[in-house]
Image (cartoon, rainbow, N blue to C red; front, side, top):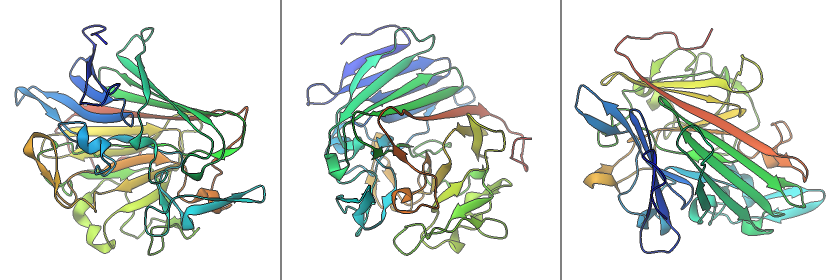
Length: 359
């Protein structure tokens, strides 16, 4: 494959045939995305004061760690069902489906070989007015225990100050659960800068889903008010993290006060650089994860990523919704189309913010 334009370049990546790395450029943003796992490898923002581009995504220099199963879900699409499914099973229409138990006794991010560990078909979206790449994957009936064939697509479109992600999934003949998530680890100070605990965050959620000792939601929708989970007002991530055993790895119930369609979900800011990332989505939930399980991950440019080196904002259906009727359903039937959109919007400001929710 050859370069399509100045805005989108394509190159073979690694030794495995069919693996490509796409480079999308638009103004001061450059994104590199591979069709292995539909994975964001890097996202660089131009920093005029430093005279260089700053990569704000954790990842690897080569495709090998993404492909050999050692990546901690850096940058990828996870599914068929993101997050955890209790006891690695669910029942539907009187039939029990058994899934791989790859997280204690539970299923995590689609099982042992989820969508992050497969090769997607890919193409440049030529009719797009901005640099864009589409990835497609046909998930087979019974793959990782899930019923029915499922046609999945993910499109990344790079605008001048934002990255738009649109996911789509269509069951071929059977009802099946679908809840996809984008699992990039962000560090707005730069992927080589260390901890994100000095970042500030606000999350448009008055409630969250408490979990048991194995990170399975209890079914309760608990208020965040008066707890360490309250980010309705902008606060430093590290200010109360010691009150949360293990760190943040919890699903927030988004308020979505603006109505249907894309709604404000969260805003993250790095005070040291003034970089801000705003997230909009149409999903009901947001998993806020602070990289608690990173130990000594050998990343890009010789960097070693340790605990809290990055944060994830995974918009999603609620964890274990397949087993909890109190949560919004993630079941999709033939003839229905699963859609999931998110927008990552970037800006730079030195102005302090104390209130974060949109009016």
